[in-house]
Amino acid sequence: MALSNHLLPWTHILPSGWPELAGPPPTESEVALAVKLGARPGDKNALAWAMYCRPEGATREEVTVACGGPQANRALNFQERGALEFRAAPRKDGKTAYFIGEAGSAPGGPNGRHVGNRMQREDRAALNIADRIRQFALEKYIQPAKARGESVVTIRAGTLHDEMELNANWANVCQALEGAKFQNLAAVPAPLREGSKASPATVYRFQLSATEFTHDNVESILKRQFTPISHQQKMVAFRLNDGRELAFDREVRPAQLWVEAPGTVPEQFISEIYSADRPRHHGLPSRLRHSSLPRSSARQVAKVTASSFEQLRSLLEWYTGQRMEDNRENGAKSVSAEHITAPSCMNLILYGPPGTGKTYASASEAVQLCNGAIPDTRAKLMEEYRHLMAEGRIEFVTFHQSFSYEE
Image 1 (cartoon, helix red, strand yellow):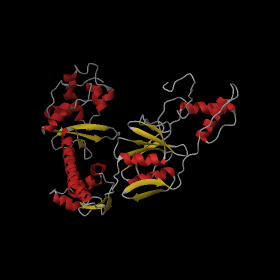
Image 2 (cartoon, rainbow, N blue to C red):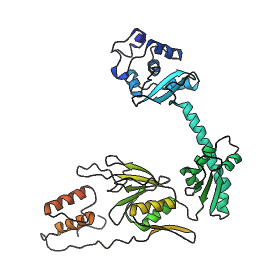
Image 3 (cartoon, helix red, strand yellow):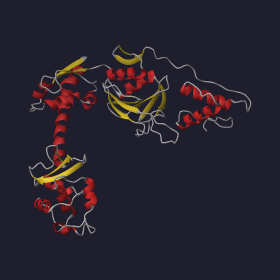
Image 4 (cartoon, rainbow, N blue to C red):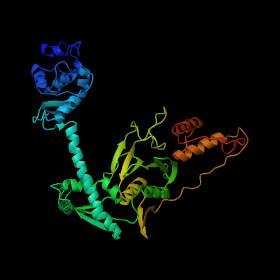
């Protein structure tokens, strides 16, 4: 597209004319507004500003095509000084566009938000308030109640708000008390809430159990209930009696568990679905892993969050289909299943001279253990056997008498 006269100062930047992928070229009035707001004609920043002044704004891709990059730093500096407003807002085509206008003009419409430093300052201020609220609640309520040996502590949002001499920050108080950060800081499970979600009258009741909801305790519960199959620094995995797998992230808080989820996860849990084609944590075991092997078929899995023993029990009940019980004896807390039994012994020794079918028999047993049934022909059996090996569910190991144990 040929350049119009008002874009001539940018000819050294756009030697081949205006790129089609950059949207319509800025009009003379849009260029004039950019210059008025502080743009320097002939500069890449100024050309980007002129594009930001268009009624439809400009996406990062459009500015990159025209200017070789987003060119936002100078706009952020001018916004910081109060000379203009630099905002982002959704466009009619569904893309996020950036807009520049005079201070107070709210370019981009009512759905726009400030970009950069001003937004960051507002976020930091809210974060600082939340941190103060969490620390105050810990020192004023949780720690003294634990020292007195109390089992429950009650916090009224309005009372804490007034004690901190805050100004109309009840929503921040409620959000801070409900959040996982406070649960981890105070080592308490998610509270029971009475009243509306964000009100001075909202009351929170925290259970101060003798055994805290820590990652060590969660891992201990899982080890008592399921068969460990892998143990890494960041991830420990288990197998259920029916062959399904469960993995626990040993670092992320609150507790995150990975489970197979061919359907949906109940709404009571905070979860994220990972479809079969979506990569996930590299430390997951074979049935939960996203594998790129040609013959593999990755399963849909879910990452589910548990913030308390109650949530963990409900999660395990849903996943195993078994009723789990809370045992509170002598201050200890554990989760146990009524009907979960240890798997029967699966050790099997096949012996005989060469050529008597030991390898085929072992393949048959392995497929039977993995799938619960075996195909009706040898060809189909060996095909399924190789498929399961590719998935990492079967491994063939040779132990020869000439090897030492170290080898």
